[in-house]
Structures are given as C-alpha cells and as structure tokens.
Image (cartoon, rainbow, N blue to C red; front, side):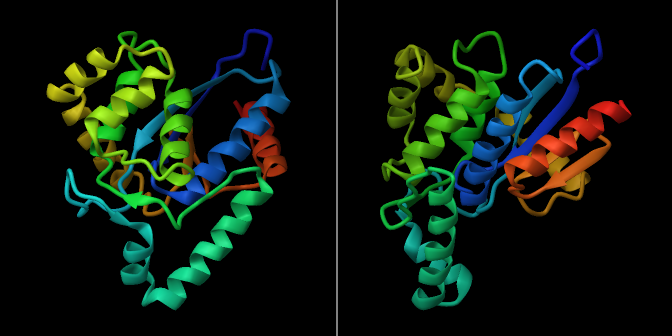
Length: 220
C-alpha cells in the first residue's frame, strides 16, 4: 500500500463528549503510528451527537446527565468507574466527576472547519484538544470564547474562531453529517467507516485496529 496504492478513506463518526470515542481515538492513533508509512490513510472526523437535546449555552454536571440516562446515581457511578478505569489503561486522565455536559454543535462545526484549508489546525489536533478540555479539565466546550481559547493553543487566531462561530459556516454540513450517520445505520460511536464499505465499531484495541487496517488495505 505504501508504494503508490490508493489511500484507505476512513470516516470516524464520534462525539467529543463520548468517553469511548476518546479511548477509541487514542487507540486508533497508536495503531496508525505503528503502521507508519506502510499504509496510506485519509482520515476525516464526522459529526454525531450523543445528546442532541442538550440546550445550547447551558451546562450541567455529567454525573447528573448520567444519573438520568443510567437509572440513578449508583448506576451512573458504576458506569463512570468502569470507563475511567478503561481510559486510565490507555493513559487518559478522565475526570467525569468534573466534566460539564454541553451541546456539541459548535464543537462539531470547529471540527468541520479544521478539515478545510481555512483553519490552520488539523481535525485530529482539534479533536484531541476538545476532548481533553471536556474529560480532564472540566471545560465548557459549548462556550464560543472557551472554544476560541482552546483553538488558540493550536495556533488558530481566537478572533477568527469567534468570527467563524458567529457565522452560519459549517452548520448545514454538520447537520448533513449527522444525517449521514443514520443513513449508514450508525447508532453508537465511535464507528470507523472505511471506503464507505466496511465499518469498524467501537473502541477496538490497538492490535485489532492495526490488523483490520492491514487486512482492508490488502483487499483494496
């Protein structure tokens, strides 16, 4: 594949508030690092909303959101404990006790922007920074000013980020990406769709990602 073969086109449907998406991205990135130049990859992140009902501009502790979703504080604590332990095995300091649930449309618009030539930061870098802000630092990823500050750390002019978010740019495109997830039958994330033909569901381990990517590259 490294000698003139077409790149594997990988679309990763995920949400920046999804803990398994953070774990999955970390493992996927490590598999890609292992592969080096062996396989050419064209990776794009696509929008998916775990909680489309979250009100824009409003936050709440994730512990409260999880309590509603999983049937009470005790069940929520068990889920948080399990996912935190899994994240720690991959070197992620996941602090869901301080995380703030927020609407993720603005974050997804920034990720769409990062895939265009107009944004100097890469999608992967933006995804990493937003997830760390949410899961580890307890930041409000639904606040335009905070988002501008976070992208500023990646070399993006904060004023340009604010201007972008103040416009309608990326709004329709993000909505279409979310719609495409349904067309693909994606109901859980992360989901890795390769060449619009094969789907790799969930946060697979590094060895599995590496093995599957090699196999798909051979088929191609």
